[in-house]
Amino acid sequence: MPREACAPKLLPNPGQEQPFRIRWECEETNRYYEVHANLDVFGIWVLTKAWGRRGSALGNSSQHAYQSFADAVSMLDEVAVRRVKRQYIQSHVSL
Image (tube, rainbow, N blue to C red; front, top):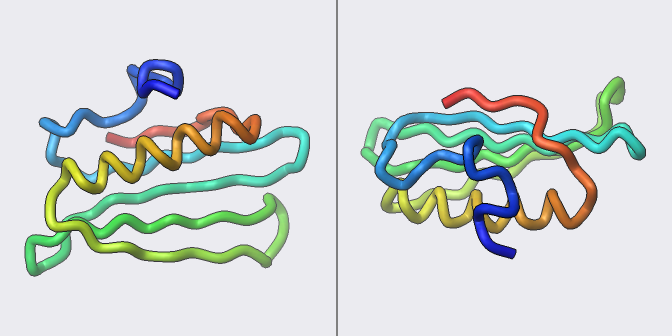
């Protein structure tokens, strides 16, 4: 699925090297999926993915390090495609 099909105005461009936070929600299952990207003190982009069910203490998260912002955005594109395929709707964006 091309990037444009996910939400072209709501995903960061590889040229915009700034932290971001994006959240998807699925109304049917009451679940959420969130991605944060931040630059650490060593100049490495860290992508944090968190997921769970609204109103529940259960859930999980994972962190992945990327040498460039473009690599982090590439992974975000893959996440966005999976969320759309699984009927999630993008509900929040902080760029």
